[in-house]
Image 1 (cartoon, rainbow, N blue to C red):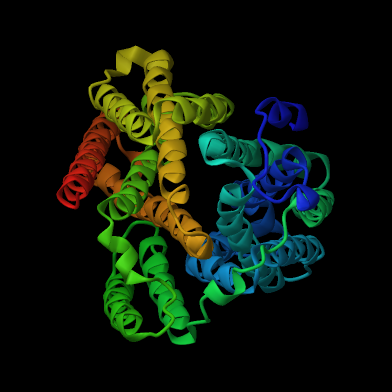
Image 2 (tube, one colour; image 1 turned 180 degrees about the horizontal axis):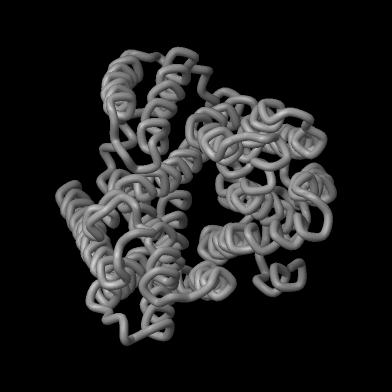
Length: 483
């Protein structure tokens, strides 16, 4: 990895006497991103083992996954802002340490609730790592190379997501479920050493610009996001009274949060930032596009197993194509952003996703694995282009004192999209297939449900395309009018 980074010829903007090794700094950031992404996907494969180890139901052990996801979702914006306040390197070091120690506790857990608690703490560490890795890019690489650095981080995120299930399966079969947590320890130590030694410290003169803590806004946002995430995840796509109550509570909490932020002297999120149509559109697009991508993960296993009749091993291999394509596309996407600009690459990415979804929505069962893989490859390649361009567009224009919180919001929009996609697109798929019991419907009905769900996904991609085009036009009109 270091050789690859050095080939980018990235140079830090810090003074010469304080200049860290940028290649090693990016290696540390990449490893942090890999660990946090790995933690998202590696525990899923352990759920059957955990039900046996703790003599628990699936509903109980699924909290091993949900606790991690909820911690990241509810805390990622707050920890990003906290990094702006106390110093990003200091907080990133703490995040890696928290993640590593929580992994040790998870590995030695003797009860299920001890394991779930450790996963929540591990999610806190992951939230810090996710929020601050992107925030650091603007400090250690020049603006013209931001796309390449973002592409590298996107690649590591995709690799972590793709590697989780296969690595977890190998570790569990060779040792036990505890090994999926212990594997984080040596990687976490290496990441901590790299970050501590090679990331730049806080630059003088920024202390006076640092915002203060907003405890009420932080609490309201955490409660709101918790309510929304639980509404979308409890019941596994079936909305009942509890889900509706939580969703209403999230709506009320969000309204209160906006009111508090409009009155706060040092708000958690400066609402004035959203007067920029490009920032608002980029965050909205991130959530929508992530919802679309989640369709491939929700619908894919059922279509491949039920409609095409593939066994579990082949389904796993086919499902790994998407993350693999995203990983291979991330670095070229960064170079394209640096060369052609964020706007063009953004549009190409969304157009690619729209086209891939349309192909999938029209795909006959006779197209088999080849047709499915072709469409999924187009969708995930488009997503890699979009994500790199979108992240670069946002992070390259943000003032240094707001990089942490905006990086957190970018990650939050992605997480909310994934959570929403799991629930909403899963429910649409079941509706179109004709039953929530998908193992009982015919292969033809499963295929029909897949085509309908991807048609909806194509429509969402078109909404993102409209947002991208409209925000660019509005911003250009405002710029010309201010001359």
